[in-house]
Length: 403
Image 1 (cartoon, helix red, strand yellow):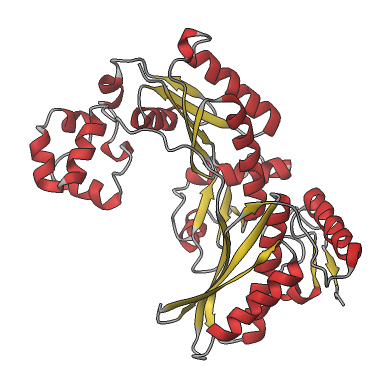
Image 2: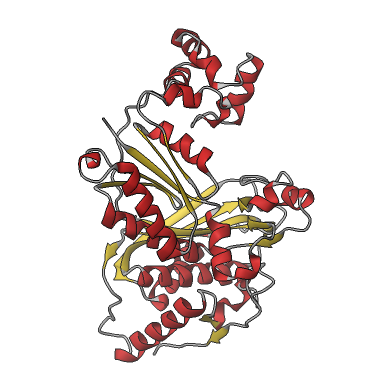
């Protein structure tokens, strides 16, 4: 008998912000893009009560919940907290699949012989909450689909086990939109056919679902009946990191554009050093107002040094931006990642540069990734944080030259 565990960090981005600042507890929070084109990445349960939810335009969410505190968020901070949970799971479970930054699957098959899968999962959940301070829920069953649905039913900050043979009765009374892969359009089509509950699909012939939706219909029928034989995809370290910025208003301000991509490169370089990674490939992406997207990349020697990476990023941008059209989005990506620490080249300023990076990273790890940065990226930052009204400490601006 298979035992598949699904874990999900509850309102992860919101939980991290509250972990950083407890004064946010109990308040309606929206995390995501703050401009008119912004999208909600996470909504607290308090803001969900007003109808706000992830994936919704931020403008609409603010209208539904005008009292919500809007936080732009910090990808490197969320990655750091996700890694803390990932490290615990990697040490505890035989096989781990990381589905996203806040969602995990673990194969516990065979562990009932020794300790009991549910007891083991409960103890591991308690350990995660104690060591990270983050709320997490889990569902345990014989397959990925039922476990994922069970986690959704267990939330917030709870756990549930679906015993073998009880998959169909558990799923039957639920809305069909709770079945993974049933999106908004599919749900709308199903409603037009009079199908709103999982129990309805369970009673239908599989051929009927297949005739309407093709292979997708067969998949929905199988999942609705609690049948899912998919294996876990073992977790591997990521091979690239990236950052993108969509502007609230399309721009041709080259100074602004270069300031922003400098800031992206600086922040990504910090993430590399923090994760003890080096990159060997840099990519820059531009999306124009007509949605035409272009990118350039180049190979470099393995590094995680700001001054090396920023220069290359600007060089690629200059080669790429030739149309002089309005720009909607810019992005920077580092790939070809390998494990390793920052190493100076023979032509750098000896130990002084390495000491500077170490000091900067210590400050960032203690006070946040925006607490210290280069003067050349000042225009891309907001003094006093990014939307958090309780984060009023000014950052340190560092003017640094290497000779």
